[in-house]
Image (cartoon, rainbow, N blue to C red):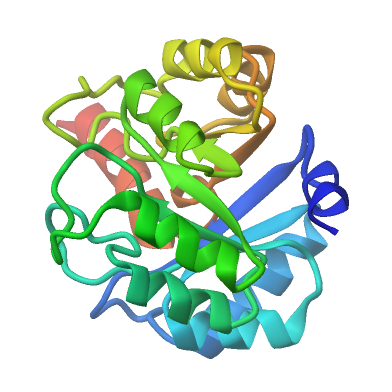
Length: 227
């Protein structure tokens, strides 16, 4: 089952369907509809956050679902503990994404405990990392996929203007498990470049599913042109 699941994502687009707290789209049914819309456009999988959103999306589609639970706004807050990981697994998500950086976890427990909790539930683990060393460590602890999601968002990783393609390339060379390119992929050309750098799959979120940011990009460009 896990092999077939992953093969269905090889060389494909995964779309992140998320809205931030307080935004007009911050609603489980809206995220369900967003997921269905991007599936119509060709998405092979969905990444989403929040237990209610995940349950709603899971009920609407059988495509691979990467689930996470953001708790907090700083530090390790993407599925930060084994408890969070187990709850995400119970929503029916096929893959549980969690922060696998070297930063301390809020409950002081080791990363391995969260990975074990997901595997005990019969789900796969996507380790969100910021550096090559973190990706290698996560794979050694049993992660099934490694994502470049947090590159540029920790003190240990410089922020690139676009996706961190060098990190994608280094991880793809170093690991025998799928490397998922995620983070600041804003154009189809960048998505293709990520695959050419060795990514197994590509996750795109903001550039597809976050109209507030998309509108701001256009508004900023127009204001600069007319200043």
